[in-house]
Amino acid sequence: MAKAVAEETFGVPAGPLVTAARALRRDRVGMAALAVVLLCAVLAVSAPLIAALYGKNPTEHYGQNAADLLSPEGLPVRPNGGISADFWFGLEPGLGRDVLTQLLYGMRTSLLIALASVAVIAITGIVLGVTAGYISGITDRVFGFICNVLLAFPTLLLLLALSPIIQTRFVSPGENEPGWMQFAVLIAVFSAFGWVPLAMVLRTTVRSLREREFIEAARAVGASRRHIIVRELLPNVWAPVLVHITLAVPGIVTAEAALSFLGVGINEPIPDWGRMIARGSEVFYADPTYMVFPGVAILVFVLAFNLLGDAVRDALDPRTAR
Image 1 (tube, rainbow, N blue to C red):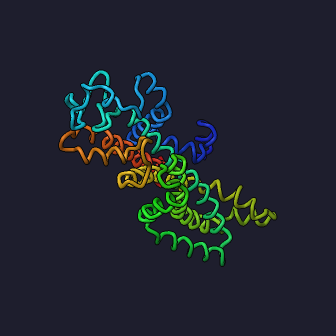
Image 2: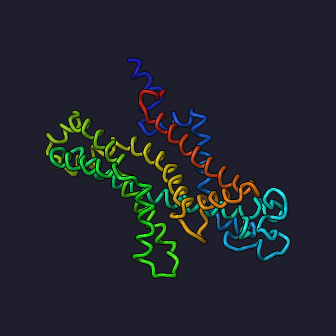
Image 3: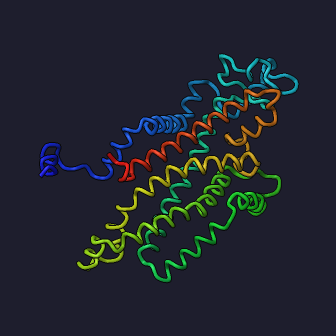
């Protein structure tokens, strides 16, 4: 009776997505993290516009073109890394490039690789995980074996080994590896191994759903296997997919930065946070300011995504919904 009165008073009960959105809006930390994530996305997308309004670009060697910006040792002459009204975040030691535009375009690099990888991971994980979980039998056992084999591969070491092999196989001696190839290799390797955890979670979820009443009812009315997977199972597994995607993005960003730091990720002249941190570590004692900006940027970026992932997970958990 009370339920009927509540429904009559407040309307039709909200669905799980609306309920999760309301729970997320009540989470102040989650909303702050979402605001930071959206700000990073806007800055990355509008980097060319910001650079045009700012009057700088990430590739020009400003410090080498003007005699009063860098010392003979290649360090910024002005204090705090060369911060001034012309260069808001200072200059890169050595080449004398603008730090602000390097950061903005480096954010584009990280987001492009992370989002492209996550898109492939989500599609592959959903298709394979849901299919293997529903079909079961020998397919499920083979799937589990393949997943365990892939999880045994050390992804970072594999990337370190693949980079020189691909460069010598597809790039002529004396030529630089094209930018699209660098992006493609990173996305391919991150995707090839990143789908496994998502697929295994979805397989477990589907195995618990396939014996539920609504699946049995679909089978009883003669629904095809494809209809059951697409229309009945997929709408019930979006929650773990969203959580996995939100938490996977910062992991890929940090992995890509680590590879660039080691010299096998994104190479010059494409701006990249990992390579900026590597350069900052080389000149830290002489110019500590240069290390601060990419370090703080990647810290804030990854922390915001992790906090947002936790907030999404809590919002989608029916036990915490209020």
